[in-house]
Image (cartoon, rainbow over all chains, first blue to last red; front, side):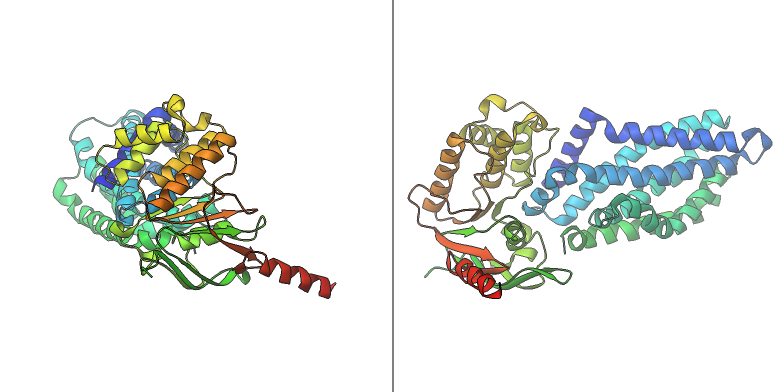
Length: 223
Length: 229
């Protein structure tokens, strides 16, 4: 897996140098949360449901943008061709791009969760701990689907415009599970009550990480 | 005759219904060189990428050591490609770019390899500058180092002399000569026949999607257009 490590290290080095992805993702997440807080007054009750909805709107948009940004570095000067010519498996390229997108997203999500707690006046405690599994699994799922579909979209004329049209319908099962699990976590439910939704998120992640790992080879080369 | 490194049978590429090239037949053995001449937009770059397996052909086969180039397994990818796009990361330095690629190729000492090649292509003074600050000629030199550092068995060089000054042309000619002497197969494309320091390259011409001995197809095409006119 030396190729995986080399690509991931390179992506993180580029990100630390420019900050392009994380700054954009944090700004986008903040913007979405602020708009939703202003639109739905958290003081009017059902805080858990509103906060969960706001968090997942931020997560899905940040996820699509993060995966797309992780591929931008490879599109400049057609660097992706350099990776394809090298003696590493395409699956390693996918895994590294997925890992980079996931890390960028987690940084943005960490910032979003802190803002969410402040905006919705939620407690930093057990609720936050229970929120972690659905958010982490959701971020992985969005990153897995978006990385694969962003690769396909980048080869079309519509490019990034096509990505939401492709990602959102596929992500709906995980989105429902994630919103429900997050709302339950923020409303004070126990871990046992979340388990059903978390299992669904795990199944979604396994399915789409495996699909990306197996199919990347076929979608990355130009027809 | 030893097994050809590159063998191409009936290769064709269409974008929609528009043919780029068709019926391409080619063989390049160890220590042999081929020069493909063609005008702008004739399909030379698409041909290079298709030969390398970076673009799927519409029909036909491009074989490297008998294996389809599109489906070479990780250990079998011994093809160095220079394309119009440099495949270099603008926000990494020249040294970081070469070290990164050397790591992908599991070169034992990436840093030593990078230093060696930066010196060979005359970029040692700019080694720690980011590629985005490079001139077109400097980027071309670094792209040549990227294509050749792993000593691939097959070199596909799309206009290797583009944007280079006199020293650069001499340097690339020297590297091509060395590759041929070491038994590598080299295929280069150009707008006009290039003098390669006395090396005897097979000269072919890509005209109207057909690959033919240099001069022949172009002459036929000119005659056809004259008779049509």
